[in-house]
Length: 271
Image (cartoon, rainbow, N blue to C red; front, side, top):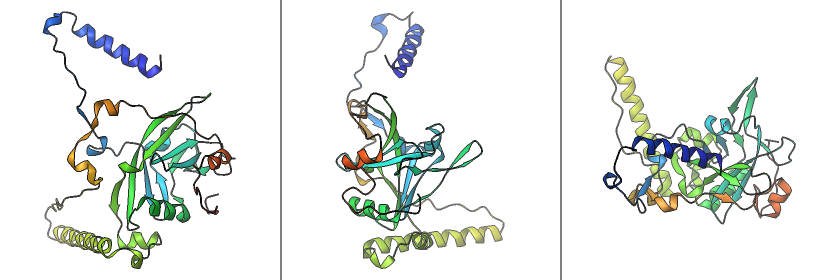
């Protein structure tokens, strides 16, 4: 029995003890199959492990880094078939290991991993807009091998999209001329709204009154999430497990799960 299962069984025992005095016929029985498990993204999830992709690289948040104690380098892998982005702790000497945090004393802080060649390939393959950044919540998963190691998986289908300002796009090396007319129109409207909010905020401050932020709709979620709150309970209970993951960069390449799978290897300034 796993440690998690043991804790769950203990919780059930404690719960059962609370109802010892209740007759069996008074205890309601329900079937929760078919119920939707509410997505954590619909609630406050800033404390969740997350990765943010930008047109010129990526960054993991503090929570994600803290989840892997003392880890300074990870292997970054993509499984196109399953639509997964995977991180696996690795030795700092691994030739494809990426330093994902800055270390100061005993603290590890997030760092932006510059990698435009990677980001360009990823964005094009997924059909993402270069005028946006994308955030995805991660899930711990078990790597089934002799070491039974823990990895983290991010599912591309769960990506939340956020528009980038003109300044942010320029910083990321995005050429607006390469964006579609539709995307550029939306981005310019987003820019105008932000400028209007700034002017209203400054006017309120100058007049000594409280500024009420605009309540315009902000929908960062995939379109298919509009029709439901989450997946069915029985689907949600399916654990993400990896029959095998590469233990080093050479093996990752052989499995087609490297940074630049099926493309020419290029060095970046993060090594």
